[in-house]
View 1 (cartoon, helix red, strand yellow):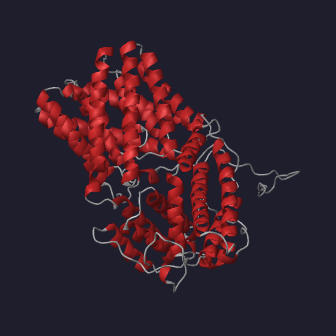
View 2 (tube, rainbow, N blue to C red; view 1 turned 90 degrees about the vertical axis):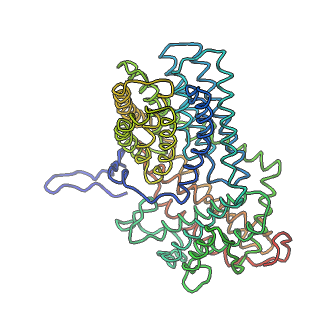
View 3 (tube, one colour; view 1 turned 180 degrees about the vertical axis):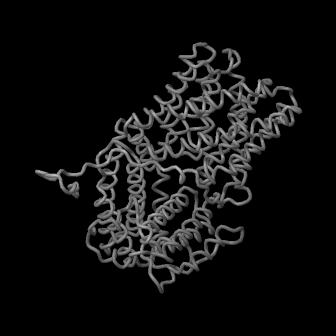
Length: 605
């Protein structure tokens, strides 16, 4: 660590070590910058419209639009699982529906038993914290916990009687079952669609890495970390002139996601076999990119990505070195995951993420305190709908302070602009009940279409939709709705971010240490498997994928900790060294894999 510079003309008996900065600068303009839309933005947008239209129109025909809030709880489940293969999506969306119904049940029972605003806010804050932890631990999302919190918090402040609860829950479960069918309907047309998109992203990321690998040759022979200086700021803030590490990390994450998608996709099919071969090429491109190698030809990788993403047949690439080994290992790994012990291992990993030492605990405490403070403050000021403040506060909490600040800016701007949109569209929605239904469906589609550009842009559409839902129970004064929403947004954002700054997350640095140790172990295992000619193909493939997964976890842990306040300095030298060593190991072990003759399930190459 460098010493504090001594100001000229001042005596100094000794130089004091420079302490790590506790508070880092917070971005503003970058948080509001628009990005390219997601390549699948239309899928959740169309799904939520289809899942909502049928229940909405059915209630309209029955003259019971006052029940829309309960069917909407189930319809919103269609937003989840669009990045998952259909076999896993079926289980994930079913879990979302049951989780939504459970949260709604708690809210309805509480609302029927008490009218105390203090109790309702406390239950709403507790539910928000539990939903945040469960969604982060299971990694379900986007949209994550915000939809659950929106539904359960709104239900807390709706008039309710115990005798009505079974019928209302039946509406939610019925709409949720229909949303499940909507989420799985594309499988009838293109059953390998999620896998194709995941593999196409891996090929695109590998093409970027192959086209601009950065200091590949230097890293390939460098035995250890290099001296840090202003031009080499480390793995968290790579120099723009040296994009290689950033590209390799992005490619590693995309390849890892593709393998995970293929592992969870079900039994092998000819299309999935071709996709697995393409991932082998993508992995070779990011692990050992270099000019003149077919696997690292960026133009060919991009062409494969375009054809894979399209609706035509999946390209059949030539066998890359080690393709047979890789596919044999994938088959063995898939069999392990489907076995009873594999399912137990998945459950144990989930319990570890929810255990007492979980890094999710500080974020849960932030959510609990921030939502409670927001709700109580709004109630003290006489705002009629404190659950809006609870939802605003809950939506802010991301992996670290910096990301939470970004979301605070985005949520505040989006909601304030959204109330203006609501004021403009309210007269149109009051023309007829059908016009109100159409407006809600339009804003539901617009929210999902815009939110991938930036969260604030999606919030511009979410806000009028949330306000229009109140109109299903009867007309409200526009000025009252707009005023309450503005106050709740400002107070919820302010108190929510205040709680995020006061509740420290010192476990973020500990997670980095654990990720570093895990990466060291995974790298050693991969080197042993690669150097052992008697190692089984499944073992070598598993070791490489475990190393890739550990590098992805290391990058995520480092990025999370880099955006936190009030913690000890990060071991950036060790982070940089671990990433470089992991990439060198992936590159060094790739040529050692030779085709095996005992891969009965891969078919003809």
